[in-house]
Image (tube, rainbow, N blue to C red; front, side, top):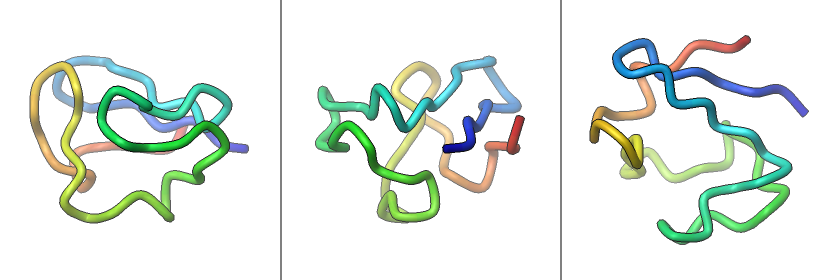
Amino acid sequence: MEKYECKVCGYIYDPACGDPDNGIKVGTKFEDIPDSWKCPICGVGKDQFKKI
């Protein structure tokens, strides 16, 4: 699965890790994350992420 990087702070969303602290289960593809999800580091929306 592909990883995505926050263009603002550099946080990397890795589907193999998910974001369990914010309700995103391990194995969740980036495109399947709700649009309301925010970067856990800087708080920007999904639209500020790029595929890496």
